[in-house]
Image (cartoon, rainbow, N blue to C red):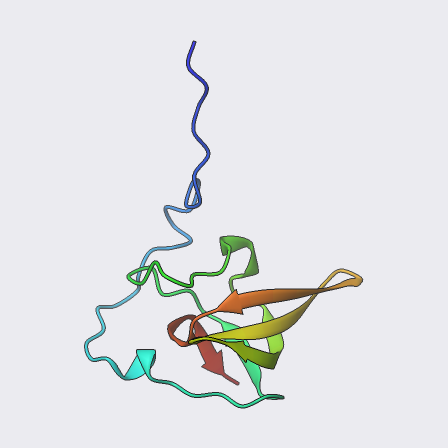
Length: 93
């Protein structure tokens, strides 16, 4: 038997479905500063810099920038995790 593949987007049919069709490039040009509070809202049409689907809807604080991406610190239970995400997947609170 062949082993079933477990890719990055497995079991995300409903989770990563776009609600409406969006136009424009302004969502790619968003800027945030260190200390801003953001919510992770995954944009399924953009695959680059997409955070893991487990973090969808989580609220975090921007701690730094890495290239075009931002480093977001999220509390996961008692642990603090750092998620690297591009601006199209983030939204200010």
